[in-house]
Image: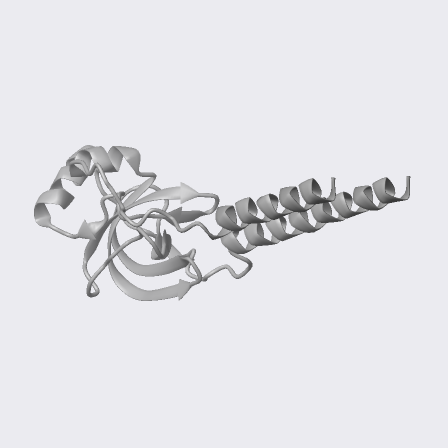
Length: 179
């Protein structure tokens, strides 16, 4: 019984260690689409110049000075969160045509969402679909939220699970040894 318990605990530890530390896929595959298709999938589309880029763990905050809003609620100074891996890969300050989705009270964008350097053709195609407007005054989503990342929370949950299961197995083994 002791050998089986030890083997089970060791197997559980290996499975949990692999689950928590397994790296994500390295390739960021995208299907792409036309500006019209991308705009129809987005909650917000705007043109803007990249003002700042701040990385915090596995998230990057891009802050844009917004020029034109094609669709959605967008502030004059708008933050867009992006994953550090497979996120926005912007070079220079722009201008960029940003396609974002609303997540909670903020905007997010990734490498597959269509955000790219602004072109007359792409902007005209989006404007024909949506019209255009001006951003709302002020700033929105321009500060990085602090707190543990999802990976840290998963690792903590796995550690707690290992301790609880290990404790139960040891307790059971102690009872079996007394009887």
